[in-house]
Amino acid sequence: MKKFLTKLAVGLAALSIVNVDAEACTIMLVTKGASTDGSVFVSHCDDEFDNDPNTIFIPAKNHNKGSLRPVYHNPAAIDKLHDKPHTKVIGHIPEVEHTYAYIDADYPAVNEQGLMLAECTDLCAWLPEISYKEGGGIFYSSELGRVALERCKTAREAIKLMGELVDEYGIYGRSKSMFVADKNEGWIFEMQPTPSGKGGLWIAEKIPDGHYSIAANQLRIRAIRENDPNQIFNPKLPQMLKELGRAAYDEQGNLDWVKSLQAEELNHPYYSMRRVWRGLSVVAPSKNLSSKVEGWDSDYYPLSVKPDKKLAITDVMKLYRDYYQGTEFDMTTKNSAGVHGLPYDYTEKSERAILSADTCYSYIAQVNDKLPAPVFWLSTNTPLENPYVPFAVSKMPDAYNHALRDKYDDSKMFWASSQVTALSRGYWNSLSDTVSYVVNQSEKNSLELVESSRNLSKNKFAAALNQNAVKVFDDWKNLYTQLLIEHNVGADVKYDERNLPAPDAPTEY
Image (cartoon, rainbow, N blue to C red):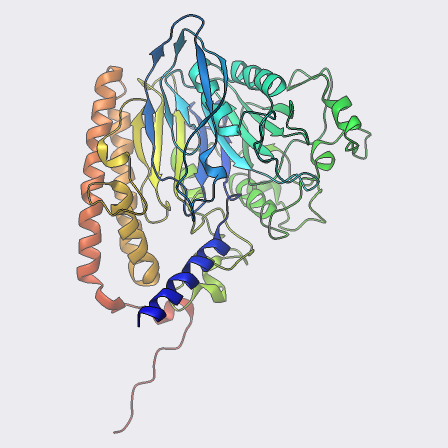
């Protein structure tokens, strides 16, 4: 028996390794003119099943003049299935005398000034990854973003700073796309390490006000346009690409960023672009965009679109719960959905939806002059089974901090949401209506609280949101218990929901 359990554990570990998908984030930007209330939204889902589920508040700090800021190695670069990650200092840059408070997680999110970031990993086929090495670049993209949140108030300031840091100190890792926005405007910033690790390739493009944009593990900027005020890049970028032998051009003769970096799809021909199609099509159905393109280098999908109707935060939440409902790609109609109609696919290298089984957390950062402070809407685990909970950029309740994946702790929201998620996935068509109703009610209450708290001071606003977050945590612990009692052993499986035949009743003994 002991040998069997050992083999089973090894097999499960191997399965987990196969299912690791570090390049799985979907990010979105809703500009001021595209939202119903004048908010700017920046959102991110962290889609790797073994990533750190913690979010943390980093307070504002004062520093001695002339001091140095340590630059930390990215823990995600270590195989966390075999070794606990250890953060280590790999370099230093000059510190500033004052740094801003911000919300941090696996990737940095939003600071007290209303600067927002969201990041996804892409693929440069001719140079997939540059590991950190002595004498090479010292910045991973997440650490680059943290420095930006510590020091910048606006998107333009952040792009300028990050570009300068890339040029001077170099980067390692993979290609990255990052939405960078403030209360007035939003940009997409993209970067790629060089073979030597020295410096780096980077470019930023402004998303027009009134537009929505989405990126999903594939670089999105196309033509590199010199002297265009809506683009920012190192003036040496065109020459750098030529010297690397990577310069590729579009049909109009423009240097093409995607083609130059061979920004191919990850894992599957429609792993990335179909998510882009879905996001653009949901917000602008009038464009009647095709779900199919000729190849990875197609420029068919625009960088951004003007929504047919202005978007509320609930529309962004709904997009992160999208599994192609109502289309031929609906995940619940696939064989992988099983008898319970699960909207997730665990198959290796399969096509995927915006919704992912591997989501560790997702967030929507919101900035609006009418709010007392920037708001960070957090959903722990997958958002289909768990609500978005609002926080100000301030200290968060203990229930939302310092959860460990390998140590159960019933005082943490991560474990409460994990219980609801696990039970829901086991019996999805039995539990989905109940779970969806409770999620919607929770978010409705939170939205009403944010709306009614607009006239509060920053501190009182933060306190009110924290009190609400604690209530949501308690509600989710109670929800798991109630689901377990009412739906024990899947007694309410609905065969007809997936057009499956019900078991035949016996006609005789």
